[in-house]
Picture (spheres, rainbow, N blue to C red):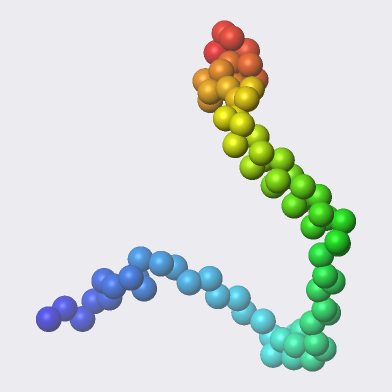
Length: 79
């Protein structure tokens, strides 16, 4: 039986960070600041955009172009 490491752990490199113990203590001494709730206006805008997208899909995606057509328009017809 082989003693070499050939498992999944050997295929993935870990990313360790060395931090001095006093620095780590300072980093963890105070609690994390609370994350503010999402802006209600932002949530309303997102909901409206999703609603408009679903309506567009339901109508058969009028005005949609193929990837090739979009790339030709964006990059020029000579590409």
